[in-house]
Image (cartoon, rainbow, N blue to C red):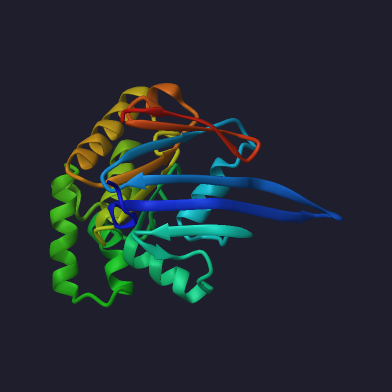
Amino acid sequence: MTTAVDNAVDVRDLHKSYPMGEEDVHALAGVSFTIPRGAFWAVMGPSGSGKSTLLNLLGCLDRPTSGSYLLNGQDVSRLDDSALSDIRLQHLGFIFQSFNLIAQLTVEENIALPLYYLGWDLQDSARRARELAASVGLESRLMHRPRELSGGQQQRVAIARALVNDPVVLLADEPTGNLDSATGEEIMTLLGSLNARGKTIIMVTHELDIAAHARHRMHMRDGNIERIEGEG
């Protein structure tokens, strides 16, 4: 029997509305689902389906209008901005389509940056960054800056940075969107290997071949879940 503590994510009747003039636009219309620890989910849907709104809520970048969201058993639905910031820093990792690296920092410094905000010692931070750089095949690029890297290498840096705090959930927003197909497949192979080692991954994508790497696929439309496909 699966319990709440077995789930990385537990969403119940989640709504999100935005005021637009005299009316409210319902971006999410009461979605419910659970994602066990160690799962790999893809969230799909056309523009306006609610997938980006959902990712923002799962990433604690926004709060729902109503409903509950438990992250690793903790209800984060009603936390204030400061508490949500702490949750993001301590328990979540983010991978973006545009990489979001800091141009002035080296690979090692970009990877280690979240640890600075967590108060880590500089030597320990550098050691952790080097370990993760090696894990994504960038041990020889530690002193390079983003402009000296290919798109695929920049995304590998972003993945290493997302892993530096050992997050409960890794959130990926169109992680291959700025990459050619071959490099995109390399990134998906890397994400697959991370998942095989137990990392929970939730990925938004509009590409069917990329979504096929996930073990479950959630299809959204008009703020609702149309269907969920996958194993188990």
